[in-house]
Length: 49
Image (cartoon, rainbow, N blue to C red; front, side):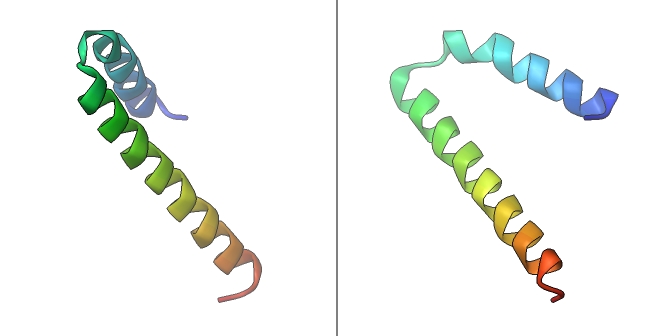
């Protein structure tokens, strides 16, 4: 993780406790979707295409 990514992660981590439950759930869903997409991309690259 580079410095920019670390800064973003720290900023988000500091903001999460201040969010309402709906927004926390939405954010969690977005993060899970991005993580899933990265896994799919990684598997695609590993399979050669």
